[in-house]
Image (cartoon, rainbow, N blue to C red):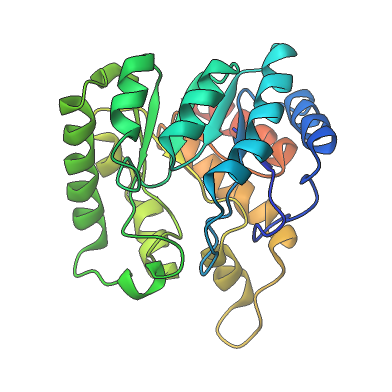
Length: 265
């Protein structure tokens, strides 16, 4: 899953693809480099990011979705708003990736159910302006698994077919680096929920912490692609359905190698 951030303020590449034409070109480039699915988002969810209003999110996202779908690409929409999901699906998106798992907008689950679209349920404890304060766990793997199970049940009760649900542990969302690492180390427990697993680690803070070591400053987000590829390979080995990344080629290569080693067993 290749990321197209149609935003001026995303943590990794904010502003680079804010223009519609450039965003569409970037999506096509990601597909040419090995992305099977292009995830288009118009609202930054970096820690501390303010929300954009619905009209602005629609203005950013829908033209990009429409253009990429018209080129024959498989497109998902990264949004917490039902109206953006509905209009993106009408424009050709095939999947809804909601980082709130349906919590941010009560209309989201009914909208996705009515459309019959696949739905990514991510672990989430609140909006970006407050999520860091909620990174408190006694057993992060158990708590994330239980909270995801609750959201899966809510999606099914709301009419989304179980075989249309994908789960995402929400790396970096209300989590510190040790929490993220523990979740990556126990992806098998998340897979045991019985749904395809999406892992979105690309360029995130916990990778910066790992690369920096105890006394150094974390490297910039764009210098974390090799670390991202390592997580991608580990995720593939653990049976993840997809990995969401900014730089597709290193991850595509890493996953290819992981699959080849698996096939040789």
